[in-house]
Length: 488
Image (cartoon, rainbow, N blue to C red; front, side):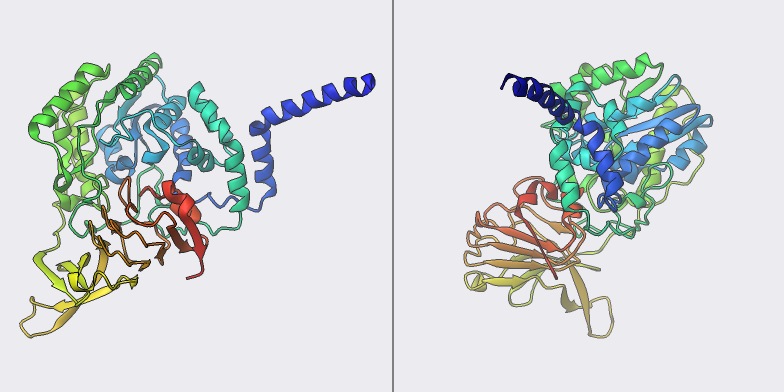
């Protein structure tokens, strides 16, 4: 018996060592065996490309660090044309990864003479020490070398999700890749790390995302300030300069006054050991410059914000405050129709090109059980001299649209929907199914998107799209426990 114990003890020790060290060797081994990683063209998988570009760039660099407002709002080619002697690196990606993660990873490639511009979105999640270990783990795939750049605490948290991430990868190994035609895909980034997909105008029905207003009231986060100050110290130890800047902000979504903007800017100056390039008011732009969120710019908006950034940077460096490229005028916005249209069941708010579903006729609220949201609505074409109708696509579901439809059990959303408002299902206590026909996740509120529905609610999405919804910019990942795949 003693001999068995003596033999068993070293075996158990070896097994324990193998278990503890598994994150260092198992995933690369699994990656070599599996036919592919279904996450490899996810939007967040671009973190690997951005990391490699940052570390491969030679000479002095201007490194932009933050969330997705950077790839949607910068033209790094224009930055390089205005700042000779510097390479521009867009190291912004996705809010749910976390500002602190982007700061950690950027330190790997920052060196003497670099300029670092930290510009997170003015959102409580970005102005915090929040990050998502499981999403980060899935995003880096087999590139475990990136994780060495994390702070010790975040490296430990990421190690704890190693097995869930591994099992998730195995379970989804046959999922289809995100198509290269999708905007939110790894393939959408150019060599600088900017989004290169054409975005011709604001596609939000009302010109802004009402479910995510821009407020400054919840951004006084001391943990975030401490993280930034610690990061700034490390940047300066590398011989680089760090500056703090602001994202583009949709004027139509602003929920702060000029006085609040002044106080917020003063708070940052007092609490950050980092010079500010300007004020938060400097980057509030006309809604026509935006694309699909209150922080994402379209093709005209990106040069606009790039010019604003360069002018502030040149002023800080004592350079002539000019830019040699044209700043486009904002694209024409949709003409708004203040009248509410009705088709006898649903109520619509229309523009010249699209419509939003804003409510249900009171007379039918109690009788609705299963609803398919119309893909189009027909309205009179008042721009025509001859009486005729025009057909508008229905693109948004507005705040409180189905509120108090107490017998509603099922809702089907077509594939052109691009936004869901607050309180859409308030009082829909029998709602147990939301069926989504599109494979591209649309914008939903940051929290409480399905409040008011039955606790038994299931969200049915097209087969093979779970990965896309889990990693979507629009925040669907927090509802992954409700997902069920189906064949449309």
